Amino acid sequence: MEDDNSLAGTLSGAEALTGALRSATTGGRGLEDVLKGLGNRLSDIALAAGLKPLENMLGNAIGGLVGSVTPFADGGVVRSPSFFPMGGDMGLMGEAGAEAILPLRRGPDGALGVAAAGGPTPQIVFNVTASDAASFRKSEGQISAMLARSVSRGRRGL
Image (cartoon, rainbow, N blue to C red):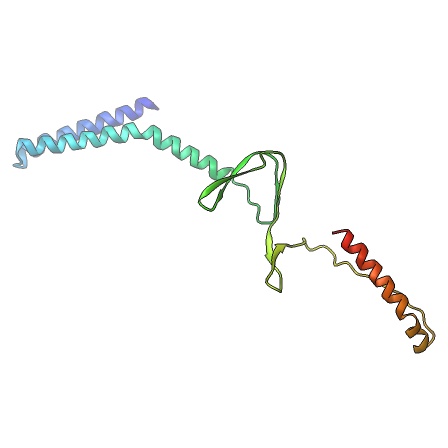
């Protein structure tokens, strides 16, 4: 592969020299202008040939970075050290072990926080058996006490 690149550079250099000499003899240009043009052309060819390995290396590095990007729009876990952009700086996550990524959402009240992933909404069901309205009113105190205990247990689970 390297021989092909050097051969292409040699041919380009030969073409530049041929073009410069043709320009000097048939184009009526001065020798000084022709030599400056030839020098510029040969410098361009040498620079392009010299930068080709760097261009290939950068292309491979960028391709590797883009190919290794893992999206976390729905959340996820980072299990090894990973860099990420953070307000103009670079952040590091996962350096001390697994770390979770949790997407944030705004609630109806405008508060920003972690949203549950569509799980069932907890419900509290009380079954009351009453023969008439008066007996139902008598059980209101018991229902209120059971509701207070359920809410208390729920708060402890947070």
